[in-house]
Length: 301
Image (cartoon, rainbow, N blue to C red; front, top):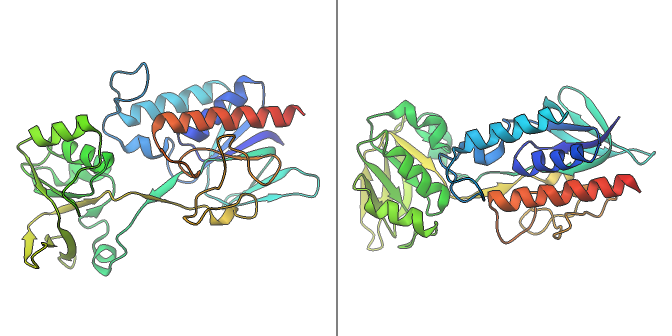
């Protein structure tokens, strides 16, 4: 029986674990995919206080090592459900077993938003990807494309210029939504070709991506002969399996305020999975600190 079980080993979950451990609580962290969360796939982090520049994977590794050093038990396993037991404690169920605890922090993060097209499904892993840092090197010296206009998309485009002779940045509008500093680096990089105000309507190739088809405002079509496409159009939550413990908003995020509390006593939420206006590395860490501290206060009652 642990004091706290944390579902998710991203920045929010690991920070919550860290705060609980520092308060003398026993903590189990369960993660179904890879430790570190979304930030682990970011080529460069430049907006975390006190750190001038760091690779996302290095940041994630340092945080993970810090939590393990403090005494957390960490286990791989996708949490299928969390049940509140008759005695008021909780049971987290994975495909491998069960973990019991007196309190819970749900830090489930978000998943990549998909285009939900037949072509995307057909070419997934065969030229269509969601993480440039993970898969870009497989297409070194080939032309590549990035779909999206936010920070992730701009970081991907800049990262891929170190591998590709030409990177096509595809956006639905004529504006970039990423940080100003990233935009300036995009404009200054002559390897990046920005295709603005276009719609990606098709992908060519049966067993491997051979190109993407864009349509312009005047109805004309353009074929970009790229061998890899990285889709970076945002993220979506995956919280339905926990809706009996925590209310969800209309978009599926946990409907919790800044106190990270839920409708269930002893259950807290933290990070990008929570309904909030800003989702950044700093806000994930802040949520983790709040959720971890409030979980400790609740346990101490």
